[in-house]
Image (cartoon, rainbow, N blue to C red; front, side, top):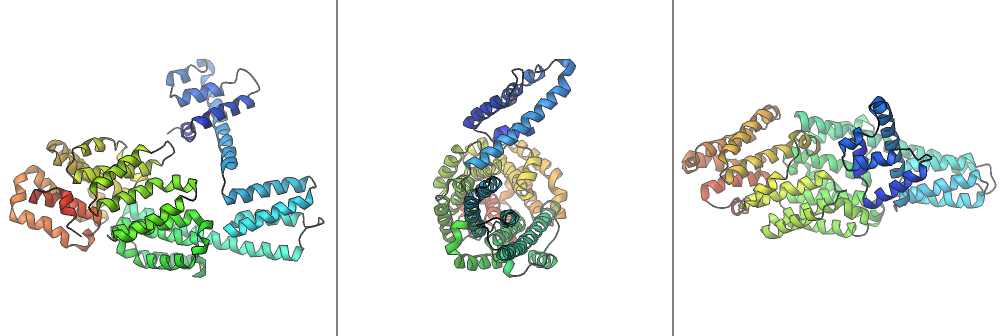
Length: 493
């Protein structure tokens, strides 16, 4: 997507009106065309863009105008973000900015009051980089009357430097683990997660105590959750879940200060227990997650769709299919321009799956709304998600007698993903596809004893115990037993 278009998409109708006013105030001449360009890009008026300048000077002038518009959009967004944010971090940053201004204008007493308040907030939030800037400012003006004792100030500055180094090491370790995760995810690299984390901790000289913070627990749990999803085995990360539970029990009094991390951790815990089929525990974490989201509208907006997705999955796999479908439909109707595309696609594919498992033909319509390319899905949603999406498309088309289309999709799937599946030792997906293909080419195969044995044998594999994998297997069993796949899946765990 065009960079300017991306920035414009971040603005709501009120923001756009304010941005136009912002440009009008900045324009010193009447012939400036930035407002025209903004309107043309917003309405995607290609012909209008071509007419903006005469052909003789079209190229250079047009690109210079685009650059100025992009710079203004960035400036407007930065000011808007700074002014509208009500987080404690931004409060501290504002106080530092004001404190610097007051010191430069000799309002020393009130300046130090602002900086002291900012320091208290920054310490409370463990914003070490902000503390570093603040303490440097205090040191710069330590010669003024009313300033703090220089030795005490220096000691705090040096202690904060140590904290900054510790956080930097944790961030480098997290970046390294994310990079390794991409290798596992996209290239099928075989890795033992526990060994990888231990090696990374040693590599960056991270102590056990360094790992006992909200941020580091969140980072490790994020990596663990992604790893378990790729391996389709959430039992592999149970030790990290237990460690997280112990940490959370010890930190109850601090949760309001680390709301983003706390809500994120609750989301990971809810997802873990859902995938382990402990629906009651998953639901209890979702309730706690919603209670915290309700305390801050920013986080309610950020996590709402993800919370609804897990809530719907818990309902569906505990026998409340109609409620789950209604919840997803309502959630999709409430999506906004600012909603993350990835969250919307998650809801849509989940709704398609629910409808298909219940033998509802409207799943075909939902399938047509998953319109992005496989390359986009692979990059944004991951290889596993994209493979499941393609498998589901084959099954839904077959389910409603679009056999030729299903076979065509199956052949396309094999061309695109067979090599990847073999590389990542996922031959079971190809074995599953063979059973699907046999049924498509010869529906009577479902009556053969050997075919039934091959289908049911998939249930004996521990690696097929994930609820989503069971849902795919249930589709095949439903062909044998003349029931809906949903009726079957509820009996498989």
